[in-house]
Length: 199
Image (cartoon, rainbow, N blue to C red; front, side, top):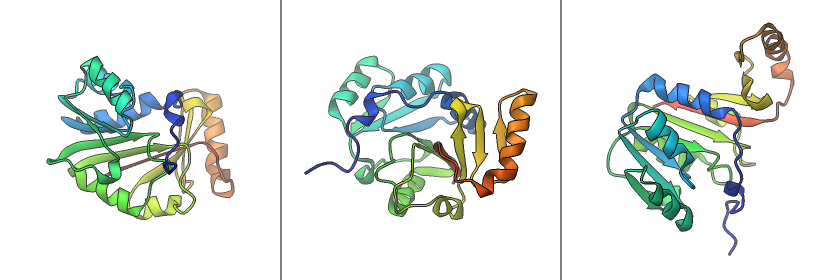
């Protein structure tokens, strides 16, 4: 039986420019314990532990060979081979981070599971190259997520309801952001999807 996730997808680095924005979100809540979903070879473990200095970093991935490699780095405090849909973790986490790992399986039940792993006031962060066909941006916004489209290698973030545009510094980008804020509701913007919610 073919798995319902793309086995080849995680062998390629897909997120140019996302890192500073996600690090900023994590810094805003000063997490002590973070779950890295789809930890892969350990890139986000390096960022979480090495750059942010997070005290307790947990990784989970469906691929045993990737978990073994991540284990060899000695970064994660805990590592698990598991499908996140069936993963149980005893204890409150300050943040759950899923960078490009849930694009084939995201649904309401999985969001309930992720939100249940995070303590009150904690953060759930999702980045996806696309949403599953039966799931819509409005399903996320109704649950309290702030949802952005990420365009132009991290220079432009456009809130999906058209209310907010975050751009890189500079007058050209501000002008481009203003145009997008006006046209945003009329356009079906392509690009990565970034969603976050304080639980």
